[in-house]
Image 1 (tube, helix red, strand yellow):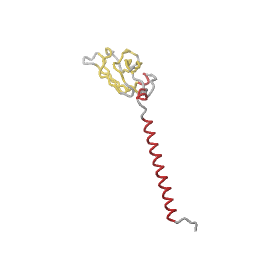
Image 2: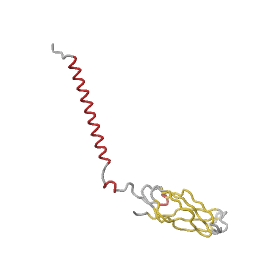
Image 3: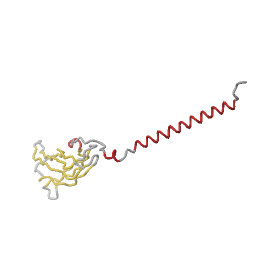
Length: 155
């Protein structure tokens, strides 16, 4: 006598399911809205640097390739060098290098120091095609190119 007819129980169950689904949709929409708003932090956030610069040019500037040849007259050493800046936050300029020329018996014949022009940005690769070094030393069996320093480029 006090039993609820089956139709009313099914209707009540259906209303609960629809209500739960509607609540879930509202929660998803709110989460998406606040997540998208957090991603847009305005101009103040974009003005801040992404990564701090801790300069170490000898470590950051990797020599990808360094080839030595002679100029057309055969008297001057000419280098072709490719570098990569492995730093995530430092740009470098006035890159200092050292070239060493050695005899077969490991005797150093000549050492030269110089500076490469331009700026290399974080993650960038730069090629320095055919820059002149010194008069090619007689008796040199092998030679070496290394980075000795650089200045941090300011914006």
